[in-house]
Length: 244
Ligand SMILES: [Ca+2]
Ligand SMILES: [Ca+2]
Image (cartoon, rainbow, N blue to C red; front, top):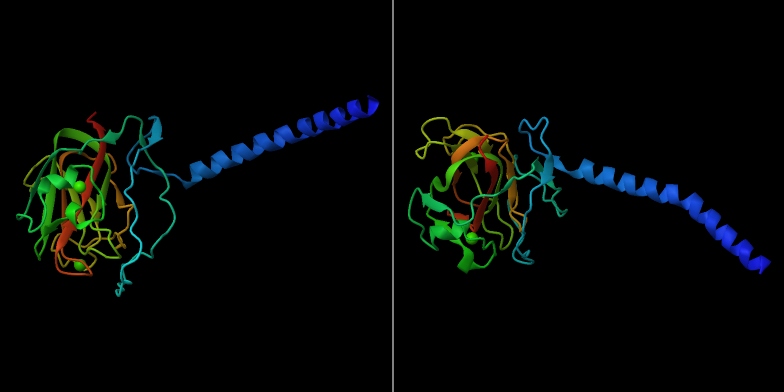
């Protein structure tokens, strides 16, 4: 009996000693998560933030290795993307919204840009012919935009060239077009020199910080890729909140 009490006493003592250690560990774990998150560069002072909810399609494995190098190419990352923090209430606002383009697709339908299907199969693909081409989403109203997420074509390793993304309240993009992303470092698309990186496509898509810009239309330019001269898309997602 005495022995049993002693045993429990030791267990109780161990628990008392261990509890603060465990609590400390979970606090560190939390800190680590917060450090890993990316916060929008929008002015979010005084606003409560939360991670936007992103659903990823299945990854493609295999295909031919990429035979391409560019001075502006970002090394491929196999890590999960850190959570992207935006003002609470920021949500997907592009699903099912109207799409227009610079030219009729040679494969697929424009409605597939915002239909929620992000698969890498060819039946999910929209293809536009060679040259600088664009697709445009009409969100139907002005929003504060926090993220644009784009999947070009992620069956195998490809790099799409001259990715320029703009947001505006003008459907013609003649006035007040805000630059969201531009990786055309040599201005071969003629929209200005960009500082953003080229990257290898995968199932994570590319998340671009829209920094809270107020806009109704989002336009995405491109000019060919490492496999051919065409522009391709499987999905574009815009995350925003009713304009303040
Ligand atoms: Ca789609
Ligand atoms: Ca270029």
